[in-house]
Image (cartoon, rainbow, N blue to C red; front, side, top):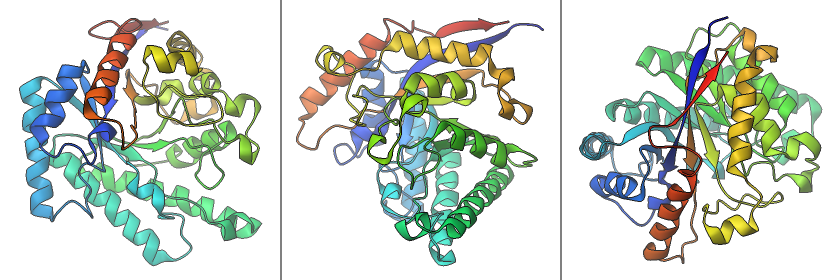
Length: 333
C-alpha cells in the first residue's frame, strides 16, 4: 500500500475574542501576532441569532475573510461557542425547538460560506433529565439526533460545504461522551450517507465526566486520540487536569498544574493513522490529510487583555517546540 502524508499544525479558537474585540481586522491581526497560522472562528463572535441582522452578518463575514487574507491566516471552520451549549436544541422533545436549532446551524453554514469557509462544527444538543431517565425516550432521541445530523450533512453538501464536525463531550446528556458512543455515532451518521462527511472533534479536556461514572479508557485523552485522531480535521487542545475541562493555556505555570502532554498528543495521532483500517468506521470514512491542533483557551472574564495575550503567545511558542513552522509531516505507510 502506498504511503500517504498527514500534516499536523497549530491554530487558535476565537473564544478569546468574545466580549473583548469586535473588529474583524483585530481578530486576524491578533491571530497573526500571537503566532497561529490557523484560526477557528468561534460562533459567539458572529452568531446567526444574536449578532445583528443577516446583512450585518454577511458584511462581517466578508470583512473577516478580507482580514484573514491580509494577515495570511487560514480560517479552518466556524465552531460553536458557549451559546448553543445552553439549550437542548436538536435533542429537545418538541419539534419546534429542534427546528429552531436546525435553523441556527443552517444560517451558520451561510455565514461560513460568505467567509470563504466550507466547514462548521460544534455541539447542538443536550438530552434532558426526563429523556435520560426513560429508556425508550432515550433510544428514540439518540436515533433522532443521528437522523438530524445526516439531514444536516445533506444540506451542507447542497450548499457547497465540505464537512461537518461534532464535538466529543463528557457528560451523558451531550453525546458522544464515551468511546463506544463516538464509534456508534460515526458509523450511524456516515454509513450510507449521501451528504458531506461528518468528523469527530476530540478535545483533550473532555474526559472529565468522572462524576457521572466516566472511567478507564473513556477518561483518557490519549485513548480518544488513538481511536479517533485519524478522523479529526481539528482537535481542540487545552491544558487541564483529569477531572475538569479548564481550557487553560499551555504556559509554564499551567503546564505544571495540568496533565496534557504534547508529545503524547502527537504520538496518539500518529498511532490513530497507522491503525486506522482496524477501526469499524473505516468502512464508511477516509482518514484526514491534515489535523489542526486548535488551542481552545477560554479565559476568565477578569483576566486582563495584557495577561491573556501574553499567555496565548506563550502557548504558541510552546506548541512550536513540537510542531515546526509549516506543520509536522507524517508519512503513513
